[in-house]
Length: 271
Image 1 (cartoon, rainbow, N blue to C red):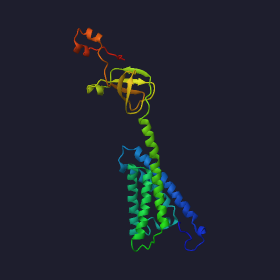
Image 2 (image 1 turned 60 degrees about the vertical axis):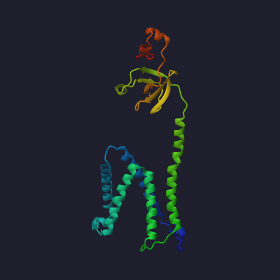
Image 3 (image 1 turned 180 degrees about the vertical axis):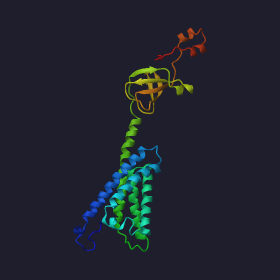
Image 4 (image 1 turned 135 degrees about the horizontal axis):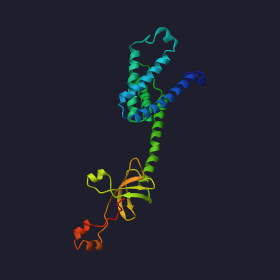
């Protein structure tokens, strides 16, 4: 399509519009199917990959057989008419290509898959030009268009990462905010108690950031917290320092500083 009419034809009049429409339809369907395949391959992550490929391939095979059976030549001569070694080689290559594409979608995404297909077109074109006996002449415009497709898709992949990295950096340096405490329980989870670490569980009015965070309990006591993975309004807190022992506590312990440190009055409610 790049050099249509370069041999002295009518130029635009010789452009096969039906062929262009079929190619565009193929690209649109291929991209849409790649997105759907990526969605279900990653949604059913507990299933082995060969089971997911088998489920998808069964549907593809049934649809292909149904469409090929509508061809008049297939109905007259049979499905395997005129098959030879080259036909079997093409079928085998498409099988390998489909399985490798599924592995690529499982590990990466549909955009990376389309980049791989565009790179494969470049490799095939270079092979046709360089290998002897194929009789293919090098055309710079065709080669540059293939490279342009790969560059545009790769640029699209790179551009969202700049905004995402900036948003992540801003979230890491977000200013501290006051959060209203709804309830507090001085008894932490059983897991932390078993390993000998005293923690507290609490509920707040607003959602907390995911993961580990630091804050001040009551504006006085520094704490390290861990937000509950399924409930952002609940967290587990661990004190980073303990309140000092007052002189009154020392007098109550009859001058024994060690006992006073042990019997220090609790500053947190039991519930």
